[in-house]
Image (cartoon, rainbow, N blue to C red):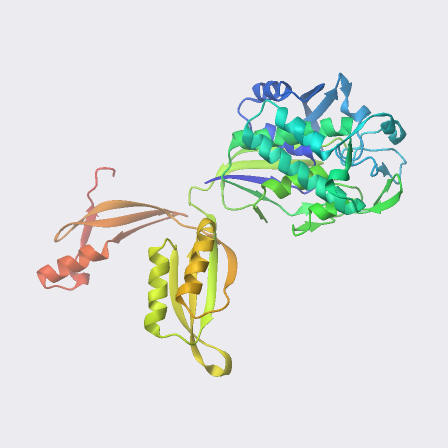
Length: 425
């Protein structure tokens, strides 16, 4: 399974995510050429080496009609014109994550557009349909958050025209990179938001800003020890769209590492680190469904477990338990793939007397397995060879062992395995 892991120890922004993912791409120059010819009006994206705390990475710069991004940027590319931040301590008007300066009063001389215009632009670009779908979903996440922050419907939210193009470049770039890197699953560390306050056009706001906090709801976050706004709405929206699980680095073989840097100089390396690799041991997230039963016969419960197994469950088993008032009961447990979750729930409710099922997401680690032929003192039988985690195990097929034992009138323990006979060894 191909795994992408994102390390967001100093937050996340669209340009930082793009820089980190670009370092994982096998042909960076060709990618930038295709991104710059996608059709975003007047926009050109550049990647340049950048050093943060002694660590080299890639910093993404955007020029609009030949002008540097920093000369245009309002709060993280895509904030509404009502939500332009400045550094409360230095009184410099800044890009939400990377410290680009700008006078917010100049922004009002530009035109503004609504979500509908942004989605029409995305749909017109020369990118794949999958990239368009993901980019539109990310933009809707941001618009919904801004609408919630300002108490307006999302179709009434206005984006600054230049900031919109800037944001679209970041969003399209990240969506294209993920589409081309093709990870099977994306994990992320908990997200550092920073802490403190930022000044906007209408006063002082806490960090994370309201729109960012809305996007981050339900995701594991922490403030950290850096007094600055680290996680931006675009960064948060991209994580919400693509990340399936949050936590520490999962079991994986790392093949490539990419670092995308921001502009700000912070006490810690201001970067997102991306790691791409695989899990040859087939570590994956599975769903565990459980229910307690005290009003079914053993035969009926056994039939339910058999039905689950024959319908694609990874495992189904019954455990004797004691329930309320020391009544004996049964615990039915079903392990299944997430794609089979609804089917398994339907079967459990249909074939058991339960009225409630508990659900857990768990990691499952399995060794690599393949079928082999084994030489024995009584002929060749089938077996299974498993390897991984520094161990190798060989297990004969029970049906073959029992057949030989019956045919020869011996115990299974009398059958000796002499070695593997298949030609792959």
